[in-house]
Length: 316
Image 1 (cartoon, rainbow, N blue to C red):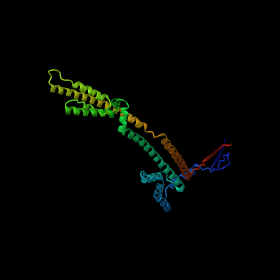
Image 2 (cartoon, rainbow, N blue to C red):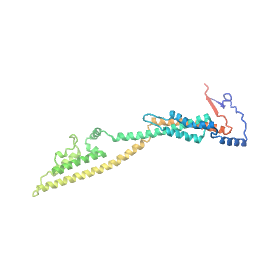
Image 3 (cartoon, rainbow, N blue to C red):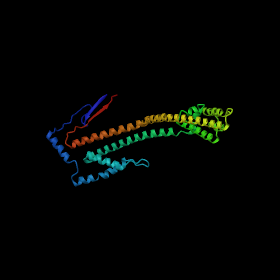
Image 4 (cartoon, rainbow, N blue to C red):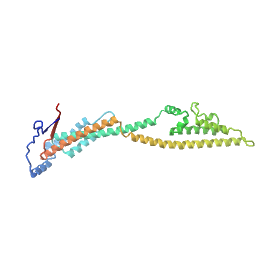
């Protein structure tokens, strides 16, 4: 491995040749700086005319940098405002410094775009995941419940399932109030004829309340008493299901919050793409700022050495 070093393009490979520079006294350097500060803005009519063209220049630059699509429309006014702020702060003199300021502006604008893209990817990941989880196909959900054998057991593990069971029991209660008793038809819970715990419990209740009244008991009063017991049983079961549903809802909300927090990082490929884009822009921004600083320091009268160039090559 051989390192060839040259300064300012002077000297052969492997030789560092310092360029002779005139040494300036502190008084001369201070005078040059004062003179440079006096000439930071346009004073002549020609200079002022050039300054007036900045708005047109910013507009032309915006046409090539600002994205204006059918769905995505970056603000040209925001970009022009950014141009004015950078020009006012950096105050370039001459076309070369203006070109470097334009490079700084473009890198800063694209960095802003990269961070907007990152925010958009995060929002898309969080929203899309939430949308998929909250729009479950009812048929698919039902199929998953029936895999358990008795769907009631699986339904009691979710807020949705508990709500459905409570709704069915409420329908049974209405029929009991209308018919005065718990009938066999009323307990046909819609599980496509499949045995389930809910229907079995209601059948046991129906058989118990269908027994003939004790001797000497008025039949109508006995029937009314059985109706009250049935309604009380159903109300108690509905309250239990509602309580279980609330508990499931709290757990599901906590899980959803955790899933959304986990989705705050974009997919690995997307994140890598954004980071590589930002790294490139930051490198361009740093290079433009360094070059701009050198030119302004040179214009202010400082004796700026040529940049050190290192050429590294490998010998076979």
